[in-house]
Image 1: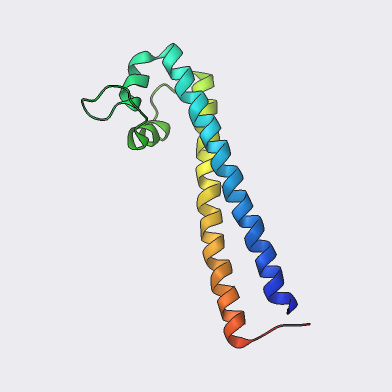
Image 2 (image 1 turned 90 degrees about the vertical axis):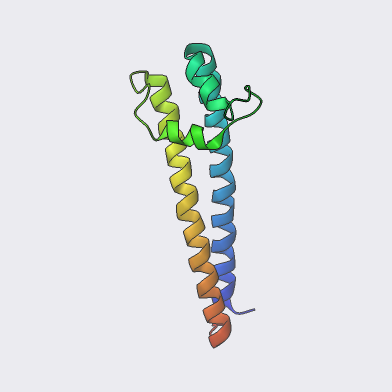
Amino acid sequence: MPIVPLLFLVALAGTILTIIVSHAYLGVNLHRLLRYLEKTRYERWSYIKSFGNLPTCGSNPFRAFRYIWSDLDNDDDTIVKYKNNIKISVMCMLICVLAVNVEFALLLLFAKLRIGVT
């Protein structure tokens, strides 16, 4: 197998691993934020966890991410820490998704041109 496509496959595997780790880090911090909000700001927690008029049966990701990017409750350092960790995770995942698309495009380009150094 030529070296150039092999290097792209290794880079692709590293990027996918980074997406998986970022997603896990996002989930842990989101869970910690929601648990902290339940203890300190119950009204905000119940608003984030509810779907319309339904009770707190799950998590509403639209409300959660709107809250994370808002300035609400930024007076609490713990909430700000969790919000910033979640923002970093999301940005890292978005960058990695773009990198995966570029890597696939380059890999297809090299496969089409059959460029490879053995």
